[in-house]
Amino acid sequence: MLTPIDIQNKEFSKSLSGYNKDMVDDFMSEVANEFEKLYKENIELKDRLSVLNDSLKKYRAMEDSLQNTLMFAQNTAEDVKKNAKEKADFIVGEASTRAETIIRDAERKCEEIQKKYDSVLAEFVTFKTKFNSLLDSEKNLMEEMFK
Image (cartoon, rainbow, N blue to C red; front, side, top):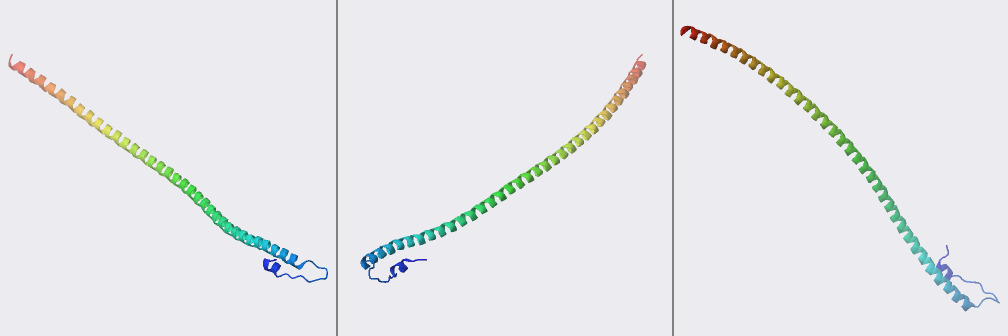
């Protein structure tokens, strides 16, 4: 690659009907100055391009990381949702089972209470009948005694 120093140090051979040396030197100096500006600008642009490429790589890495994080978060959310549904289903199932057990126990106790009630009622009817019989016999006995 041609550098500004190469242009400044360039020497031309002399000929009899050659160019005006001062004009060539002035032009070469001007070309060297312009080339030096362009050369420096090219180096700066390459440096900026390198920095921008490094930044781009970092941003792409961040984007990949964010995408991975987002996918992980979505998967985690789906897992949490699935686990919550399973837990809710389990809790509902357990509550249903407990409710059925409580209802069966209540029905059984109700039947026991009904049987006890029926038994007490039967005993009461028997007692009433016997008591009425006793009263009737005592009444008859009293009537016989006071006749």
